[in-house]
Image (tube, rainbow, N blue to C red; front, side, top):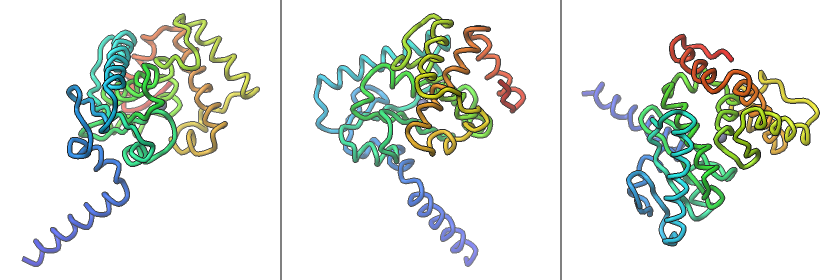
Length: 244
Ligand SMILES: [Zn+2]
């Protein structure tokens, strides 16, 4: 009886600690029960979002899915989409005020949280690309092996906000030009492996980090094609080790 009691106590304590440290996971898991409306399976919008915005969101999601299918040859990611109206709600779900969109992945489920600035195909396709990579590789291998620069660089191949060229060589040239406006030298990739490295050193650093990553990924695609990226991912899946 004593053992049972202490086990229950430990489980409750861990549950409370988890909820305190990572409240965003709980909010996402139970989005159905918050003040959201499910306008299509797995697409949730905050209350009082106009019909016009709802229709735009559905259209942008559809376009983003097309982009994912064109790039990846299909779509396996099943992330739920949470569109927020207020900055406070975005922060509650994403645990950040930064950016226009945010992806949360767990071994069980994943979510894409959007704010008003995320109401466009680019941001949604960007976040869906993170989800697609995680779905292909699995949560654990993605967390353990995939450097943030690769994850972000790849997502920028489907996000045309900064460079819109569809030609792989031109895209590489354009990303290099964008990078040169911000910094004469790229950041070494070894300094962009973790989320903390990438996002934790100020706005300008993060911007240079994005362009550095996009230059690397687009260079590889321009030289060897998309298939090279897929074989890197396949190899990581097979050997459990990322090599670029
Ligand atoms: Zn991203």
